[in-house]
Each structure stands twice: as C-alpha cells, then as structure tokens.
Length: 85
Image (cartoon, rainbow, N blue to C red; front, side):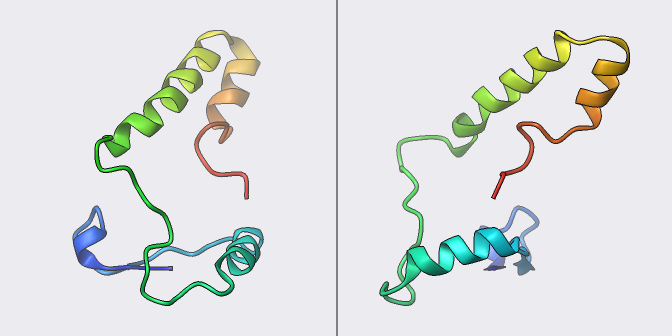
C-alpha cells in the first residue's frame, strides 16, 4: 500500500507492506469498487487517537497484572500492538 506524503506521519511518500492474509481479504472486499474512492471512511468528528486509547489502556492493565517471567513474556509479545490479519 502506498501512502502519499500528505497523509504520512513522516511527511514523505511511504510504502506500507500488507500481509498476504490481509491483502487477500482486501482484494475480495474491494472487488467491484471504483478506483480512486476512499476505501475506509474515517469519522470527521472523532480524533483518530481516540480509537487507539482503549487498546493502549488494556495493554497497560494486562502488563500491570503480571510479574517475573510472565511480565517479560507479555512485554515482548505483540498483544494489542498489531492487527491479527
């Protein structure tokens, strides 16, 4: 997936690789749609960061519940960090 500089956090053109599973799901979902039209409609009255705050809080709570080897395992894991597609 290509991201134009105006939409990139780093303010430059970027390329975001997609996993094979996600690419396959998107390919099926996008069949028959017109090119150039937004794929995902983001709400205008909602801060994008607000969508991620519950996940950040849940991860922090999960880490706070652990100690020792379990804490180390959870800290290294990607639970609530990456999509599962």
